[in-house]
Image (cartoon, rainbow, N blue to C red; front, side, top):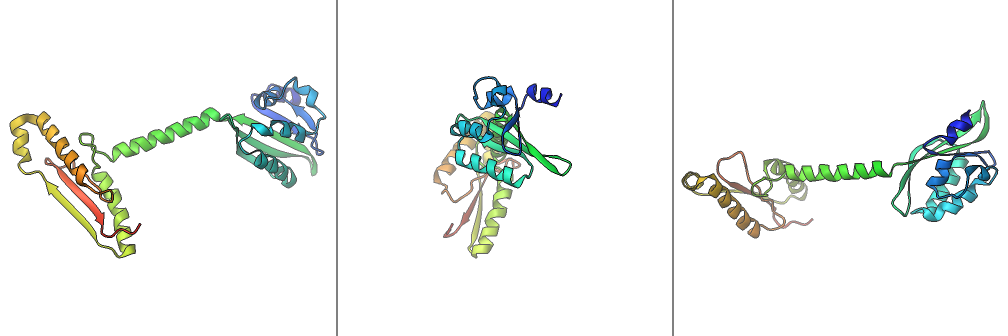
Amino acid sequence: MFSVMIQNAKTGTMIETPEREVAVINQTFCDMFDIPGPPNQYVGLKSNQLFLSHAPMLKDPARFLKTVESTVYSKESIVDEEITFINGKIYARDYIPIYEGHVYIGHYWEYRDITEKKKAECDLRKANKKLEMLSMKDGLTGLNNRRSLDKQLEIEWKYAQEDKEPLSFLLFDIDYFKAYNDTYGHIQGDECLKEVANIAKSVVLTNRLLLQDTEEKSLVYCFLELINMKR
């Protein structure tokens, strides 16, 4: 019954004898590693021959083979060890040493295709990174916002203390902006803010932080600068 379960499993599964001969292997295992023919023909074959046959598919075949040998030697269980292939596929590998009582009787290997899962995780990290970056920007001008200032100021303050360097902090406002906004309307007021932002960005050095305080009715820019920055 156990053998039937393995043959119908959706994960690539192989069981070896203590002598490293294939005892049970399923079709999913063969499909995952492009091993031709029905799996039963490999029963009794030395399993390292199978590993050697699909090693060229791996990104780091030497490491893969070394890990297999060291795992079998140590007889310590492993869970979710990631194996990367040159075609971009990523498998998770589990290993369990099999004992009957205190007698060691073989090895259990299981492989799962986690390519889509890893891709989703990567996409999620990228999306979160993008959201984090957007959360640090003012939607109108594209300048860093107050949240960005609070975060960066903490970092720069620490560096200034460690390096014993001065830290300058400059704020400036747009004169008569409220009157301009009231006279020409919010659309023109927004255009004015964007124009001033572009001018300010054109003169700010790379080691300065340009921001807009969106909590204020008028535009405020801040510069953070470490004088004679050494890093």
